[in-house]
Image 1 (cartoon, rainbow, N blue to C red):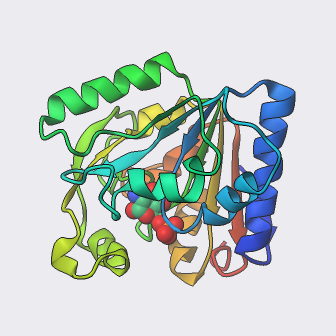
Image 2 (image 1 turned 60 degrees about the horizontal axis):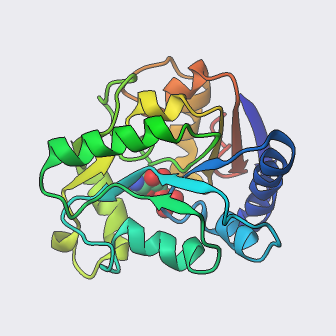
Length: 234
Ligand code: GLP
């Protein structure tokens, strides 16, 4: 794995943007895999303030809460509109359909979308327990899109975005780890002390379902962009 250490999230956004820009301009990347959470925000700010044009490109997001419609302010769909798509529209932007209660149909439809739009560059954050997308510890390392139950630690971490803990959805549709690993290139962004254990397990630990992000060791082109605090246990 390639590791780029940065002093803060601003610099992380700039470093990630350089890779995104290079991949689009020099490698012909057409499909971006995108993530939510606080970690990619500075990258999205770089993208929206750049002169890059995404109107010929496709984006495929990692996950969505089950039960939330795109116009719900807590949905990942809404987050993407706010932080990126309203300012820089893509030709097609896909997010799993959290409003579809039929998990079988929703996840199958999303796998078809991923198959038809192979991801050139996947952006990832990481959960404190090493989850990527919403693939919590114990998720199959070769999985496709699934309905997943969120762990207590993830519910607690995500409570900050909701008025009350009981409002945090307990389930999500998430791209699987197998699908994530099919991306040609992957950038993982992590900042802060509370990501240090997950980053150490991702980089130096065994490849195990206990730390879903450790599966990235099996991918040939992964760049971690991390600050000193997230790197402190390496
Ligand atoms: C959520 C998302 C993940 C994200 C993680 C970390 O659980 N499903 O995709 O990586 O949060 O979020 P943050 O970047 O805010 O720490």
